[in-house]
Amino acid sequence: MNNLIKKINDSLLSVSLEEKVLFTRHLAIMVKAGMPLIEALRMLQKQTRNRSLSVILTQVVADVNNGQFLSASLDKYTKVFGNFFINIIRIGESGGILSENLNYLSDELKKRRELRKKVISAMIYPSIIVIVATGLVTMLTVFIFPKILPVFYNLNVKLPATTRALIVISDFLQAYGLAVLGGMVLIPVLATLLKKIKAVKYSFDRSLMYLFLVKGISQSVNLSNFCRTLGLLLKSGMKIVEALTITADTINNTAYRRELEQMAAGIQKGEQLSHFLQNKERLFPAMLVNMIAVGENTGNLSDTLLYLADFYESELNELTKNLSAILEPILILIIGAVVGFVALAVITPIYGITQSVSG
Picture 1 (cartoon, rainbow, N blue to C red):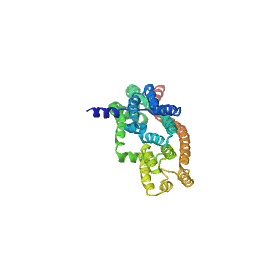
Picture 2 (picture 1 turned 180 degrees about the horizontal axis):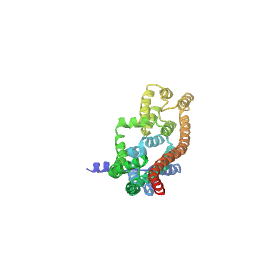
Picture 3 (picture 1 turned 45 degrees about the vertical axis):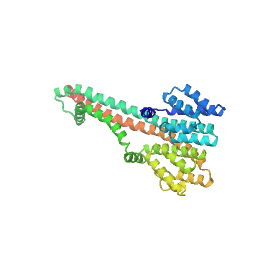
Picture 4 (picture 1 turned 90 degrees about the vertical axis):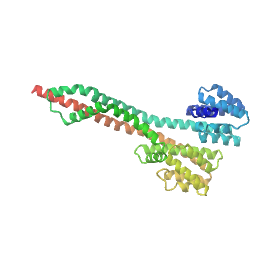
């Protein structure tokens, strides 16, 4: 029973990317300054305000005090930290470079956090415009237009096609508005549930490579994560097959993950990384393949991958800026057309009334 309660409690633990950045950075500074690991962990456990991290560090302190390696203790919390995080620490411990690897880890997590913020911020402004416009049009069609409509009927005004279309839309929203709202809430929930099915998730992730505007951002995010994670693991001294397996675990896109898993199996049989990437230009562009081939031939693969990670991060910066610049006029045109349609549907019969009265 106690084990069951512990498993439930462990499944509820959650540590933000921000907390992980601070934890690794502070631990790296303390270890580099010569503070014993156990003392550094105790200090961080007392200082942290994150309840989950405090619970984890309490257990980690006990484990390390009993002679376990830090990475072995963190292995109990793979769902919280992930294989990449734990393996970078494990390599640091085995190679006597824990503080350096903690710094690598902190920098990597910080870059991932910034990457996530850039993608989210690129979508915030268009989302706000769409929500405001939807609210405005709904208010006009459901609440304001039905109050004006009886005036048109009483005066026997001949209604134009735009007004008749708006009446149909208004009647539909008044009759089924709650069902439409429920459907709008249900669709993302249903999509989230469907994405838990592996085949559906793979098809969705693969389709991102073909969608206008989205494909460039998706590719840059995945390639920067792939290059930086693999580059850091190789630079830390990990064998390429194991490094690819761990890198695959860190990639959210299942289309890329499947390719990396197959890649690890191919390289185990003696195939070169660049050879495997050839003829997969939808996921891995020719420039990346050529650069990796150069890195393999010169024995400088890890540095080449880290250079490519920086390149794709800068590409992402440009793409997110361009996305906002492209979406803004398109959304303004669409919203202008919708609002213009509603305004025309209301104003045209009013103009007809004034003309008939003046006539």
